[in-house]
Length: 244
Image 1 (cartoon, one colour):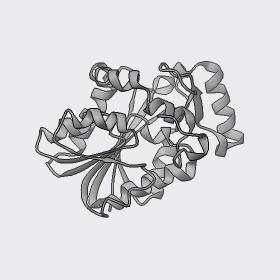
Image 2: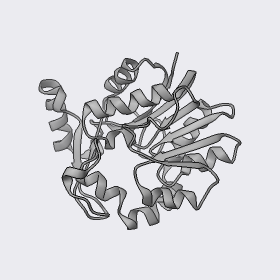
Image 3: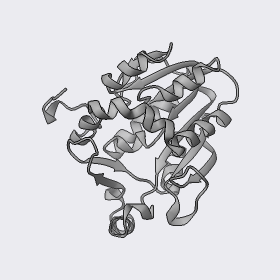
């Protein structure tokens, strides 16, 4: 599905649009997630964070891996994604409600209607623009009931696996032009324009979540193997926050 750049949805650049609509990516996505230690880690973290059945919304659900898992445990799940191709595959795999929407505009979902929300695997980092990422988190807050729980997965801008040049550039930007720091462009395995992911520091991610009104309850640092990590080996963080 090709549209001109000026018609791209808010918060979506050409690289993300190409990625979301790459047929090869969609066809192999379930297998990628099945063997990914990080995908297993974030499902495990959600399982601890969402202890009893309730209503769960997955923001950026892809082919529905989180909803599939929790629906089988008796949770009422809604998966939201911008990619119709991903949702088509999700619909074939589970009896869950699927919503085609931009995460910046979730007005079709009622406020304070969910016990749990998740935004995993750097979905937030795929959204271009700080103001747009703020809107996504504000939507997560709005959708949750009081005492509702939110799990967020973000990537580390100083992960040494990015290469020393990228890390050095990010350190300089973080010090001297922080508003321009964090965006890192990478070539796509599936063709199309480069995919830009926003990478965070732990402090920035926590402050951003706090600024929405959440209270951060837990943070774990993970390596690429899904195990606890430190320093430059930290690939990203899983955060658990609660709406007061």
